[in-house]
Length: 118
Image 1: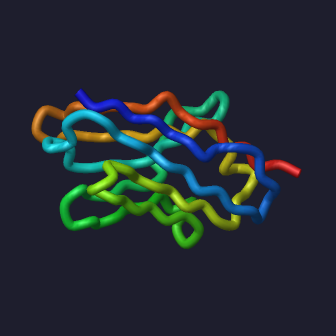
Image 2: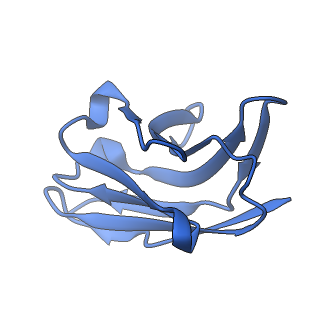
C-alpha cells in the first residue's frame, strides 16, 4: 500500500507561483510513474504532469508546458510541482498520483486546492 499526502495549495494572484509537494509512504518499489492531476468544478479530472520514478522522464499537458515543472526526490519519496505564471484557469483541486504499470493500480492523495484569483 502507498499513501500520498499533498501540501502547498492556496490562493494566489494571476501571474504568481506555487509549489505543490506530495509525500509518499509505504512501499514505492513497484511504482513506475508519479504524477499530478487536477479537477476543476464541473470538469473531469485531467493529467497535468507525470514523471517516471526510474530515469525521470517527464510529460506535461499542453496547457501547462513552459509554466509548470514536475520533479522528484526518490530518497524522500516525494514529488513536487512548481507552478509559475499561474492563470485563473489553473484553479482546481490538485491530486498526487502513483501508478503501477503491471497491474494498472493507482494510488491517490486527498487533494489540495489551488485558487488563482485577484
